[in-house]
Length: 174
Image (cartoon, rainbow, N blue to C red; front, side, top):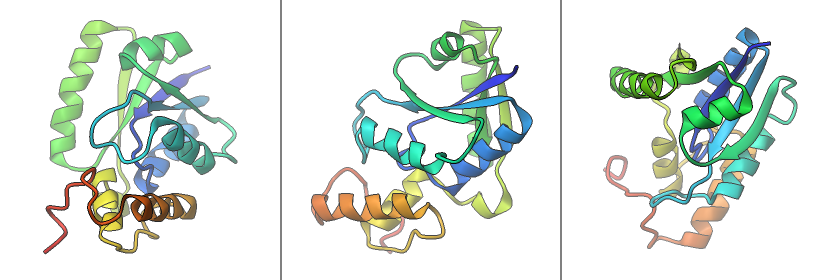
């Protein structure tokens, strides 16, 4: 049985993540969605809420499970018996970053492979940062995230108000 780990902060999860996970689920016996749960600066949703949003996104997916973790990703991959880590690639800059991370992870755990799946064309522009910025400005993210994530974003930004400083509003304000 081949188990792969798809790690990320998923802040928030979006259709690009979901597409990669479902494609991985077609290729491997088990996909473990691993939500990085360490508190970090500039994270919109706390770990438990991100975990719940990811769980809701995959509630009817037979071979996709969801968990949280902290620490080194390769150590967690070993702990859950994953043979590989799945990552999504959108643009060239993703490749450079993921290539460096794959080499570092290989140095730490050569028995854990990294498998990169190229994003589907309709998701190449999509990132959690983009979703957060659009939602922070009151924009429509319904084509980017499932409805439960859209509602969570609206609720979170209503609580934070206009003076929030979690999401830097730089690129989409113009």
